[in-house]
Image 1 (cartoon, rainbow, N blue to C red):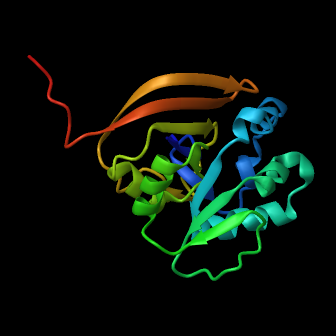
Image 2: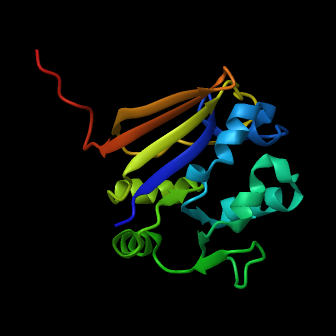
Length: 192
């Protein structure tokens, strides 16, 4: 049975991107890029929606080989979309038009290879609410993009308790935080 990890790269104030900022907010460093290029980060199927597909396939087409996209090009990718049409131009990408929650539930049961989301805020919210997410990982870049930030990641999320299972600092500034999530029905009750 495959595991599913929601995987986000975010600014400190919780944005997925910011107008005018480069990829990784221009803060990627050699340790972080080496980690992205490590074998452990290459052995999964990337799940994404149409908006992320358009953005990332564009980055991949224009990025130099040393920015981690070469391996992403070779990885299997599944895109959930009702607006895109096959065949997709990004190599090793499968287009799925069906219900993402049901397709991912089936993938988890019938696939051994780990699954990870790539961006795709709406897809991640749906998978988390359906109880399909095993791990939740954020890589926090030390920037605040209050004036230019786009796509606040946690808006419209349910309440979720996160139990920290892993943390790491790259290049003395970039924080990786990995959690096991538990979706809550509301705020936890405290005992007096």
